[in-house]
Image 1: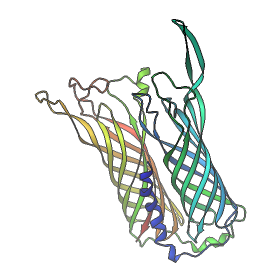
Image 2 (image 1 turned 45 degrees about the horizontal axis):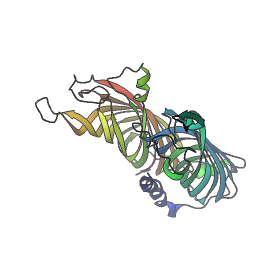
Image 3 (image 1 turned 60 degrees about the vertical axis):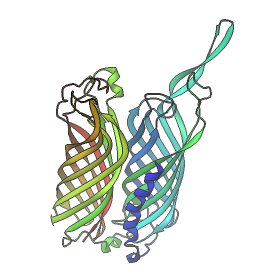
Image 4 (image 1 turned 180 degrees about the vertical axis):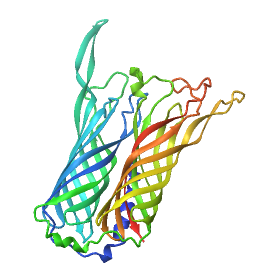
Length: 430
């Protein structure tokens, strides 16, 4: 997943360098920063040795961060994140995830924004990992055979968070922050190989991680009138163009299973996908805007919902944003109909065809309903956070039992499925 890191860096850094020449260096910042954020982590593939359960996992979570600014350019910080979704237990992952990273941030602060590099060692803690708990020895035909015994336990893995940070400063007491980087995880092999499963050597895995949130500064934040020069958004600027990072938590399901059965827990889960895109807005008045947003999710989605979904995702939403703008921030509601397209879904060719099914693109109606929080470091820059429910209207596909389409079945019913979506990005007003 390291190949996706270059896609996220330009989105944040190019926007900052475009205005860097107009910025001046600030006075010494406040010592203490306390913030909250949303975070997405690509965990990677579950243990490939467990046939039938190999899958690529991405997780969405939330966390808190505390920072201490030694100087304008150097800070110490610690961050703890929790990912509530539970995954099937393997030798590498399982259950829900808690993450802690503690290290240093070094870079350059300008008047309205800052650019930093970070290096933070820490840990990933999975609540349910398949772990050897002992051995059992038996005698068969005069031969002694020792078997490993395995159980489900909580385990820690060493991690190192290396990447970049972009901060925006709407005021001396508030900052908006975007992090992107490589979370390097040290894996370890089971001490005794299991029968029929080859041991996995220790290795370092690279995981893309993106975080975005807000923080507050304490201890000597500077006089209040220092904020007077930070003017809010201008009503004369009607257009906004921006880029964003998006997280879409798809609720996977299968029409052929009853959600109440124990087996269904393997097929009714959240599959989080991370992507990026662009947004264009037109502000009729400060409180009402029309906008269109497009996102592309490069990760491959395994086919689910009776193969009604699968492959890579392209999403387009267009609608209205209504709310209230203040001097340095704004709060809005949004309603945006649109469409979500999956590149690989199973289609029925007809009973007379020699090949009953084929892989093809399917597009479904979607409705994005939620809230928007904006911050205005300057009249031309907007830092934006979106959260809400993206409803997708699945249905119509002919499905088989347990994903085996040997015999065509009646079309699946049309119904809306609810999926949490979060976006964070930066835009320009003109």
